[in-house]
Amino acid sequence: MRKALRGVLSLAVLVGTVSATGAMAGAATAAQPTTSRAATSGESGTNADIRDRILAIPGMSLIEEKPYAGYRYFVLEYTQPVDHRRPSKGTFQQRLTLLHKDTSRPTVFYTSGYNVSTNPSRSEPTRIVDGNQVSLEYRFFTPSRPSPADWSKLDIRQAADDQHRIFTALKRIYTKNWLTTGGSKGGMTATYYERFHPGDMDGVVAYVAPNDVVNKEDSAYDRFFANVGTKECRDRLNGVQREALIRRGPLEERFREYAEANGYTFSTLGSLDRAYEAVVMDYIWAFWQYSLLADCDTVPADAKSAPDQAIWDSVDTISGFSAYTDQGLERYTPYYYQAGTQLGSPDIKQPWLGGLSRYGYQPPRNFVPRGIPMKFQPWAMRDIDTWVKHRANHMLYVYGENDPWGAERFRLGAGARDSYVMTVPGGNHGSNVAQLPENDRVKATAAILRWAGVAPAAVQQDPAQAKPLAKFDARLDVRQDGRDVLNEHGVRP
Image (tube, rainbow, N blue to C red; front, top):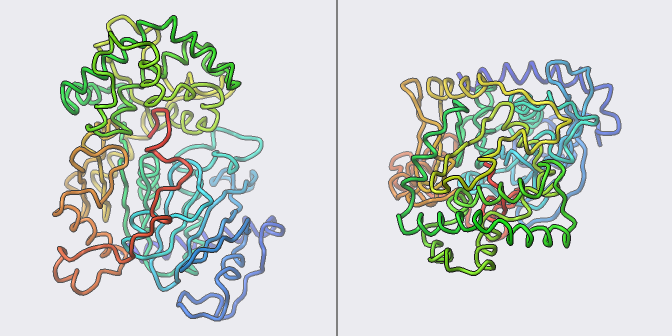
């Protein structure tokens, strides 16, 4: 049924693609479509070069091709409508990459929900199925931003439609099974795509995907921080955070010098004081998002007696004092806009701070330039949550036990079919299938192989035999999505 529905949708959108892009595709299309069997066949071994076949797609253009052993790797642009509901209202160029192995292999559609890296990389599901990978930059992240930017066209449905059009175009070449995947905001993106286009993919693998159903109710996060890790670790972190606010005067002076030395400004938030407190308020969250319990040893044990430098270094290492400068915020304006209009954002109490906070946990509106209008849509996430509970099919969610974003997660209801939610013990925001307990790991791996249509006979008979089909590659299999969640600052999914 999924494949039949997908075929109908693909045909309908293909017709729309040709009519909507035919007139404007001239410069953007590197080659004209061909009707030869070699150019349209999805089988490996065709005489047409894969580059020519890809560039024959109306609206597709090549930025560059990079060599990589065993693959062809393309950095591409694709002409998209700014508004999928009104395609005549203008277009923009959306950046994507394609890691090509063979058209006889399955394809994984990956997005981080942010920028796309232009270096070859392979998501975990791609390695598991030994397949091709299409990686997409999320709309409105530069350079994939319409000009002028109509921010009302940045929503989860428009982004899902972006993916749908690219899938429809490439499915003519990559005819085998498709999976969609992503981590954090990318896992959210994969979920929303499945909700709006359930006929496209054969499976969804969503990592550490938050699910803020009711934006104003965040008690789950407060319960999480009251119990995460050990009391000793929580006390260390709470102590450093308190001292950073108690010593606001001298540490803000250090912040001022730091900002001047690096050319940082604070127009968006309005003041250095607000930016300083935003960084400090993120400290606890950022630690558990990016670190492990063992890393508590790096946090000052006696914050009250620690010198100012030790407090500064700990906060800067974990939260990052550049995160809420204008320069630190600019790249993530599209995320904060979405958090303040549809996705929701956490607001935690942090009672151990007493009355030391002046602004509380600041809302996304504070992190977006005032010239961009924002209005929250409370129904958007309720719709997604209801759909997942009652309609999930071939969906896998992986969370980290100690990741704050997992406090509000996706949960399956009675209507879910062949779908799973699994947790990595002690895991953070980088949790994946390989880190799951053995029983869950082989079960998840077997499901991914099955959904992709490449489960070996031995795995079909005994799921405990499941393992990735491709060998580990130290260059390809290190996350390179332009936003490494384990090596950047700022509390964002």
